[in-house]
Image 1 (cartoon, rainbow, N blue to C red):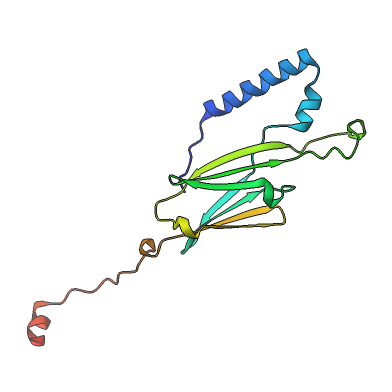
Image 2 (image 1 turned 60 degrees about the vertical axis):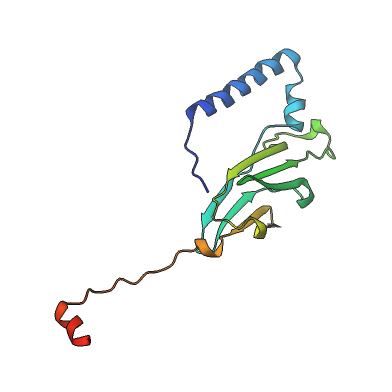
Length: 158
């Protein structure tokens, strides 16, 4: 997986969008209702590598398997899904809503040595685990370092 460098301007753009939304909500006075239903969020991921595979764990609590889409195209793995807000409880009974709801989209560049045909995903206890096996030819091999022979030993072997 490629390591993505921190870009402070990306955070500034996100901050600007949130500030715009805040001012828009103040004018329209519908902000709380809209934020409760559809907020921008993305699941946190951990990516690590073993000898035989690259593993990605994404936190997706409250999202069912049918609401998650995993797509691979041009060495890019994309996660797309939605956490829906259940309106079983009347909104006025809530004291605080801190969890984010709505759709998300994340994409990751995967290395060429990943065998894309054998990628699989599991969903258990709110964690999506994507296993990306490495191609056999890309696995590291150990080369033994030999001590060079002296000229006298080489002559004796002949």
